[in-house]
Every structure is written in C-alpha cells, then in structure tokens.
Length: 212
Image (cartoon, rainbow, N blue to C red; front, side, top):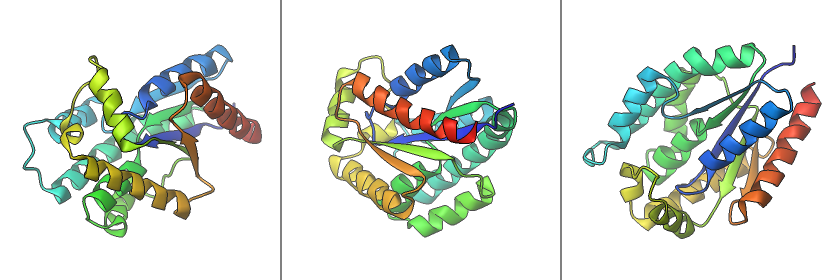
C-alpha cells in the first residue's frame, strides 16, 4: 500500500481552491488513487458546527483571540477524526485550508502574531504538518470580485472585511512562503482554470512519484 499524502490548499477569498480540489480529486481517482477531500474549518460534524459560529455574519463582535482558538479547536478534531486516519490508510488528503490560514489571517492580518498563533496550533496538531501546500496567489481585489459574481457561493464574515484586511492576508502568505519554501508552492491563480489545474496536477504527480 502506498503511503498517504497530506496536501493543503491555501489562498485568499475567491482564489478558486474549492473548484480546483474537486477537479483534482476526480482526476486522481480516475487514475486509481484513493482520495479524501475535506475543508477547514469543517470536514466533520463537530468542526462544521464550529465553522458556523466562526463564519456567521452576525458575529462581527468576535474577538480575534476567540476566533483563533475556535479555528484551532476545529482543526484538532478534524485532524484526529478524519485527516490522520485517511493518511494512515494510504489516501491522498486534499484539504481546503489548514494551519497556514490561521497564521496568515489571525496571526498576521488580525495582528495576533504568527508565533503566538503557531503556539496555539502546535498544541492542536502535535506537529502534524502537510506534506505539500499549494498557495493559490491572486490579487485580493480580483478574488473579491470573483465572489461578488458567484451567486452560489456562501458569503461569510471574512468576506465582509475591507480590502486592506485581505491585502494583509496576502502579505502573511508571502511571509509563510519565504519561511517554508520546501513545503509551500506558489501558484498564479490569475490564470484560466485549466492552466491552474494542469500546473497543480503536475506538482502533485511529481510528489506522488517520489513516494511510490
């Protein structure tokens, strides 16, 4: 049995993670791979309930530290209940967001400090990090414009933040890319879906070939 692989997808709002993950999963399954798709916060019932609290548009008074702690709590349960068992069973786990989101959004954009948010999450994940992280990089204004055009997409509390907040999120991701160049790959998300898909699939297949 092949060893499992934990791949996370990161990026600002409207960067196209969900659509990409679905397409990748279908392709990898068609090639005989066992694939599990999931998301954060969420992926399992307990974490989905925490997601509802975090992203509720009426919860604009939520304290930044409360937000960070809720993400970490959802992450812990999701990891032990779904992600780790799938990896140990030999599956490729494609996860929409993970710890880098907390570091970029709460750590940098909210001003809590990346090291402080890392400490919270280290307790939650016990050093279980992704094998590969794909950062879908897109100008925040372009991402928000995509959201405005996508009538079927949920509009959550983070979408209500000002453009400056989303620009800080992008800066946070760029800092993480500099810190973890061996784990994080930048993908230009301002391309056609087919080009983004082709580039990402090539990266994943190369990584799979290395562990087969």
